[in-house]
Length: 391
Image 1 (cartoon, one colour):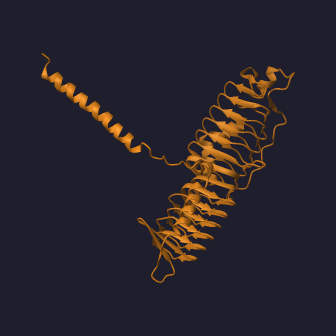
Image 2 (cartoon, helix red, strand yellow):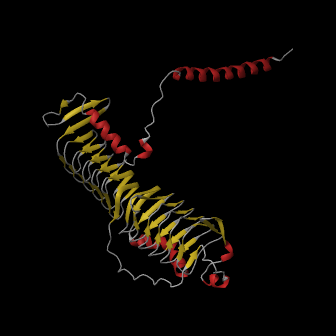
Image 3 (cartoon, one colour):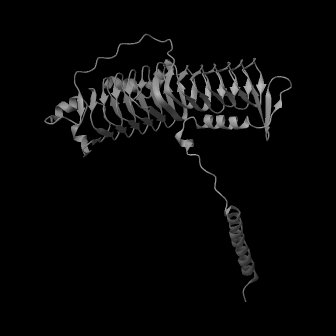
């Protein structure tokens, strides 16, 4: 005879199995025949997707029925739990608050320490006072965010966008013309035809170190097989091997004592230091960390598994990507003829003053403009001075 305990166990397990298929089948019956929502591919194609989507929604809201705003000249549109206030050019005083979506048919300005908890769309120019807090803002003309302004989401300008000291945007910053950044300005990403960080008063500029007359060329010219001469330049020829007609690999860290001239794609299985005056014509991929010293020119892509340091007055014309941090020193120029360039750091991307970048800057944590003292400490922490002196 089968024990009753076994029968009870079998019944319970059978019931659980039945319920599993019952709920799965009921969910399937609910969606059967339903049309799936379309995926807007512009989400990944457009840097200003959020701002353009908000503009499109705002224009649709303006067609809804509205009421007068108690003789203020405003129109109030109610959509569900949201209220949209539509007005002409508007200026708010200090410490004013609003929880409504604002659509301004003209210019907009607010004073210091305002609390604007919903999105703002201005047809004209917009200026946000010191210490104010916003949800998000789109302006069809120039947009100025004062010192210590915090934007919880995104900021977009149809002209130039200026961010004051310690201004923080927690998502994307986009502009049709240019983005101007003061020290301490920070966002998750910046995108514009021109991004510049404001120069700060600092120590007198030091003359660039003289570039060595010797040159380390990769791939090596034919007929130059003097191993001892290579080693005097800090280069072990035996570690270099060819992968294909246009790609070479160096096993170990590469810290040459003379400027590099790289005319083929190069992979370095370690750290890499490019001395002052180096020219990288093709892509460089480094397994660990990469330091590009002042006055160098990089025409291809630069990729590093850890951090990347770009020295003063370096010119970049390709993709810059690091698994860790990136530092762009004073005088760095990122631009390519007829195209925009991009830099992405897995953690943080730092800019000193007087950096110009044409395209996109992004990071996993933040992109921030830092003072010269911070950049110096960063270089000391990552031993850039020691490596440059050695190079």
